Length: 469
Image: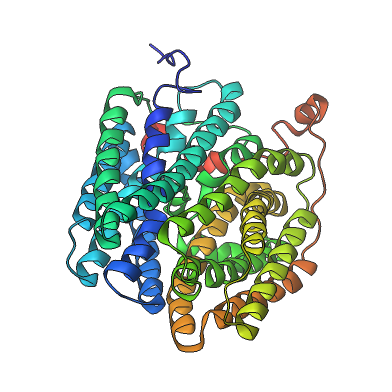
């Protein structure tokens, strides 16, 4: 008997509430962790770089395990429930952590378990659903997660603004960790009660619409990561695809190289950013949260606009324009930091963070669209998986490098290095051909025998009936 979805609730399905609450928790912790390092543990940006790099590396390693386990177990729900519970317990431990070494290990453990959820959440939406429902459901799930993340940043801003008037800042930060820990455990209970049981199954479906709907869930760092794609990548298959004439096209290879360089540049600028605001500009913790809330509001606002534009065009123009915009932003930041020791005007920070957030949706969605169109049909799934893997590796390297650069040469150096890498990425993208926009009318679909732009989600659900990916 086929599982029937519950009636609409919480602006989608009932269990989307659990996703929103879990992302609220992670949204708060994303800025609270750097503030804990700086204001409580009295560590600098070099330590933040080490933490960011190691935590991201553990997340990638964890993805190799959780994806296989979820398929072998033929269950999805337990991984979501356990993930949220583990996050809650880890955050509770962070509220009482005595030293950086303990804090580092707990963060690594938290991200290891968080990816258990990231590896299966989208699959719960698409399994045992009609194809026509996929894009709307995953798009709504993405929206709920993104709104939860913004809510977490607003919660952090408000809680610390109030808390620091009543108690020392260290106590307020530790108390906020305890508060979101309780919310994480509540998300686990909500997931236990409401996440549906689905049956893993084999499917071959059109993917570009669903990939664009998934958006952040496909690869953005810790919160919406591509972990369910990493374990599909086999080194020998990748080497063959890179080496053989029938593997990846030259344009696909160059675009993948540009992807790695782009994420390395983005990480060099973005990872030290919380401590730039906190240490160099001496902004209150609540204000640091507010600026990041503004950034992610830009992501939420831009997402539907970017999805519509890229679904219609899917060309490299969007990718290059977005990178060029961020290049100007990074260059301006580097110049200001090098020439002035003052804090920039509030209006400049507001505009900068709004642009920083708004451009993210266009960058990530155009990247997904480009890799899907540049790759051959037979290796599109592998190309998307490699794209996400390179993005993750770039972030790991950037985390380790940004801390060293910022500590030894200043924040202006990390901003300038990020800008320089974006110049390299743009130069590589100039050599990448613009993919043709293929017709998608019904007659074309019938002539091709299958959708012209077949699927990365084929790779997500490949060999479903046999319990492997």
